[in-house]
Amino acid sequence: MIETVIHGILLGGLYSLFALGLSLMFGVMRLTNIAHGDQIVISGFMGIAIAAAVNINPFLLILLLVPCALVSGYAFQYFVLNRTIGKDPLPSLVITFGLSIIAQNLLQEIFSANPRALDTGGLNTMGLNLGGDTVVGVLPLIILVCAIACTFGLQWMFAHTALGRSFRAVSDEKDIAELMGLNSARVYSMATAIAFSLVALAGLFQSMRTTVSPTDGPNLLLFAFESVIIGGMGSFWGTFLGAMTLGVAQQVGFHFDPGWGIWFGHLVFILILAFRPSGLFPKTKG
Amino acid sequence: MTRNIVAAVVAVGLVILAASLPFWGEAYWMHEFVMVSCFFVFAMMWNLMAGYGGMVSVGQQAWFGLGGYFMLALANLGGVNPFVAIVLGAVLSTLIALPMSKLAFRLQGGYFAIGTWVMAEVVRLTVANISIVGGGSGTSLTAFRGVSRALRENVTYWVALVAVVATIVLVYLFLRSKQGLALQAIRDSEVAAESQGINVARMKLAVYLVSAFGCAIAGGLYFVSNLRISPDAAFSVNWTAFGIFIVMIGGIGRIEGPVIGTLVFWLVSHYFSDYGTWYLIGLGALAIMMTLYARQGITGLLDRFLGVDLFPTRRVFVARKVEAKPAPAARVYNETAGVA
Picture 1 (cartoon, helix red, strand yellow):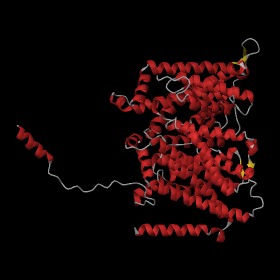
Picture 2 (spheres, each protein chain N blue to C red):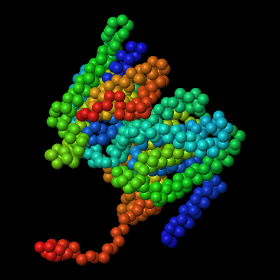
Picture 3 (cartoon, one colour):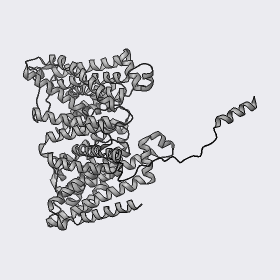
């Protein structure tokens, strides 16, 4: 049982990387990107394609792809999504939903429907003995550490930097923030740029740890979303802990029956929504 | 007035002509019509939610699939006539929608959309674990054993026709009613509507339930015609994707939107669905382009350039001419002068 929980926490590390970007975009501009999960998959496939073309260390891929995601996120928000910002969530939902369908079918056209993985040179099978019979994978541990660092970094940035202050300002009161001289279009674009970078990182880790296939996106989006709601909106540590809870719930489900893992996670989400709608770790900060 | 009478006569004539199709048309046409009418009813319901109720859902496939499964279970296991089972199944689906709505309404905007999607997935995975309706691989509708194929196809067609006409007429009457006006007021501003005494929460719940009922009818009808059901087909998010496409192409927040959108969707899928992935990529791209550049869809463009409005449900504010009053400024001046 302890082993199940440890594996759940390690899985939660990956899920929190999925969830942080979603949490950031919703927090700053009430924007929900339905193509979020598909972008994780795209990033994984891009890593796989580049690794197939040139022999490159998977961690160097991160240094290559994350800046690309940063730029594309900024441009996408600035030129497309900013046109849809407003009281009505419909336009941005339809656009990102359309993108999700395009992404899934393009990936299927280019890479076929088979699941693929990014070669890590044996890193994904390396284990660390924690004493007794408990062995944890080195790669999941790296991912968890990375997730903690990203959560800490985001929370620190929100609290202590000028960019974080401008995120909070446009989130609280966009019009007044603009009167104070902020350019909300640029602030929004920065938020999406950071969210996309996190997505790129998450996608590379996902394809290193397990596999990616073109139709995985929607499920990954749902995991990210569930992590945010379980944790409670308004704080990145909440999202992080929500992802841990979801990871453990899924591992417990898998433990009983291989077909129950995802279902179990969904049920925990439903229970939280029914009995603790503000999440397990609510905080009105950030 | 005469224009309305002419329109009504034409509409009734069209319905009578359509109803007589089994006597002169081909079975293929009837099957095609039944399929298209399921998409149409589904899209009308999505339009009611998003275009009038301001609730963007990505989880309407939950009710579509449940409608199909309840119909199948009632007909196969309960011995109910499948056509009666469509309606009973829709009632049961609506009963399940009631507690689910409480959960969904705890989320706002985009999170409402994804929340409804999670719920649809929960329903799909739950149904996939129920072995009596075939589990993950699904099952077939066997209740029609012994019924002649022609009779089955004709009745299915008529039921589909009734569903289409009833959906248009009922949604039209509803939007013209006082409740319809309240709903459109909520869409424009929830706060303002609430302050005018409209019970926003009750209105939204009503729309959510009506929409679940309609989607379940569409699902029951689809699988009566299709005879084979599986969780992946019944609860596919593609149902909502096609619904969104139909509404965004045709025009959101109008009754004629889904009508025209369904016609376009039918033509496009008829000629291009063999292209598989590229067909879906095209649909997605078209929906994005419409949202960015023509948010009111084809009917919006028709309305703007030709002034055509087939189902007038919008209320136009006409300012009455007010007789010119003497300029108040002069009086103020006099009064001030008098005081001084």
